[in-house]
Image 1 (tube, rainbow, N blue to C red):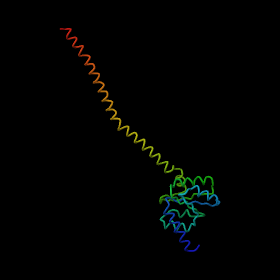
Image 2 (spheres, rainbow, N blue to C red):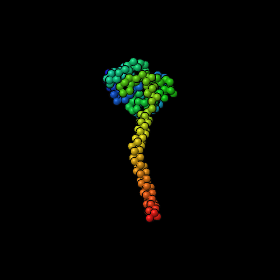
Image 3 (tube, one colour):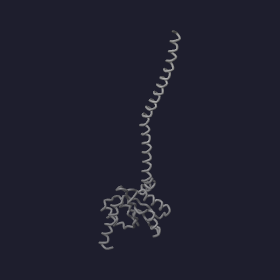
Image 4 (cartoon, rainbow, N blue to C red):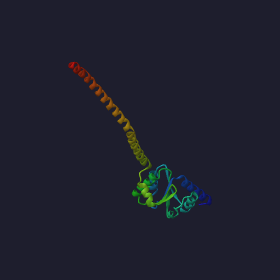
Length: 191
């Protein structure tokens, strides 16, 4: 590879690192071209899976400010540059590796933090961002419904109390009205 080609390749890889929210380094030894194509399709449109040269990737990572992955750049290496949700990409890699044991996850980084292969596997076990947001929204909705109930309770108690007082006054006024003619009859009978 000529010097200008290497410089262009380093610049391209560095740009991929800068533009990605995460990158997962894998060893692809033993996978066929059709399996690699299937893996790329599995990872989706927001993740780019590229076979890279270790030396050029070390230089590009240093230029992009990514640290902690130099020891992972041994043997045949491919990098999944994740532009979207890192959890979804980690799940895709985990599921593909289950079906194709030749794919080995070495580690990577998520939002600037280096991660081991075990941490990537734990990341894959998380629920997706959308599911977590939906659960949070449901919990917030439940809390809001409880708050509305708490705020409405004193108002409904006041309304019930007012209705009870009105009914009591009507009953008292009705009893007084019936008591007045009976008292008047008793006074006339005494006279």
